[in-house]
Structures are given as C-alpha cells and as structure tokens.
Length: 186
Image (cartoon, rainbow, N blue to C red; front, top):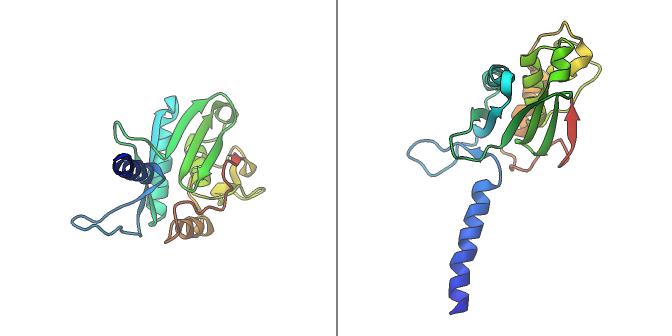
C-alpha cells in the first residue's frame, strides 16, 4: 500500500519539475505538439523601477529581431524565467541557464550617460546566450560600454541575431554558450 501512494506523489513531483524547468515552447492552438520555432521566455520587470519602459522596449527589440524566441512579460501569479531588478551598481546579468537568470539595470551606467534601452537589450542578450564582445563598435549591441556613451544603438547586429536564433533553434532548454552561474557585466 505504501508503494501505491508513492507513485502518484512521484508523478506529481515530476510534473511540477517539468513546469518549472525552464523556458517553454509555444504550442500552436488546437495541437499538443510544440512549435519549436518560437520558444517563450517570460520576464518580470516589476522591480525595474524607473527602467520599466526601457526593459519593455529592449524585450520588444529582441522580439522584432529574432524568430526562435519570444520575450513576454510574465502573467500574474506565474514564475518568470528572467527577473529584472533596478539597483545602484553597474548593469549585469546572472544567467542560470539559457533563457533564465536575473538582469540588474544598474543606475551607475545611467548616471554616466549610457542609454537605458541599449543597456536593457544588451543585458537581455546575455540571458539569450550572448557574451560581451569588447572592444567593439556601436553596431554591436554586445560591445556594451566599449562603444562609448554616445552609442545609443539598442539593436543586435546580424551575427548576434544569428547566434540567438541558433541558441534557441531545436536545442534543449539547458543549452547555452554561457556556463551556469556566470555573471556577465556590461
């Protein structure tokens, strides 16, 4: 009798683990098969304070730029893949796996004159698997601060878009060019 109660409990734990394991694939209406062309990654910008509009715009830029992943604000009561927090430090991203982690929109860079939308798109780029590419030109989103304060370009270039498309192609949710727990700054 003890074994019978264990099996349903184990099944419930396994089902819960699948739900919280990582970014979900979008499922076409009326089907049970995932649409592997659009993985949905949710973000919670409720702690992004004065940077909320910049975060939403940074996410929209990625949505306009790539097809294999879509960044969406998290639904009420749900757990987000990405937490976005405003703080007084330098902008940075702490990835836990591809499409998962925490972004800090640091006021230090904003005070120095860096563009908030570029910062947001850049840090989201880290969560999407892109490393910093310094030094670099303004045309490279992942060049970050090395492009200078005058650079306001928030758009990924062709190579950056292609890398994110590849990262979110048919790969498993844990695939990433960024090792687990690595902090990427600026």
